[in-house]
Length: 138
Image 1: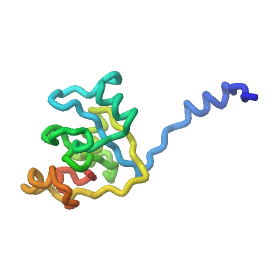
Image 2: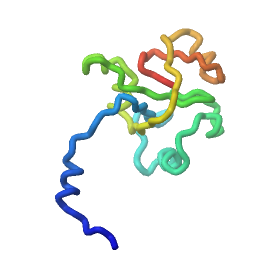
Image 3: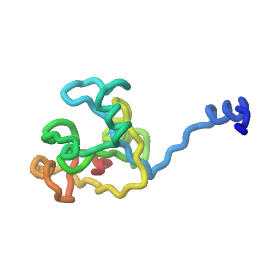
Image 4: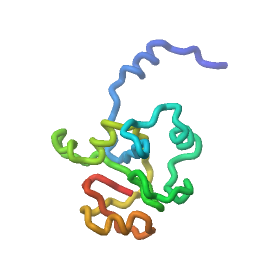
């Protein structure tokens, strides 16, 4: 027998403040070639919701567009110490402007400081990654 919906419990659940888990990573969905974010009915978003997030190789793409490389996906993490620190981070930039998906229970590679090698490494399996953001992971 199904339990009758308790409206007080439902209201309490909705009104409970959200928690922030510092172990979460975020993958932001950016529409390649456009400045606007994906819409909820966009084919790419629907594919992610059905099949999961895939690197460009699994998507059979060249890897020339967006932030993802051929063998990895780009992630950000909320590692800023103060709100003012967030402005120069991937987390702040992407979460503020795009649809983002929370990802947990993974062990990504933290990117090192940006270097000229970034363009050479984007489409390789080499685990040394670089970014202009200190909070980017792949």
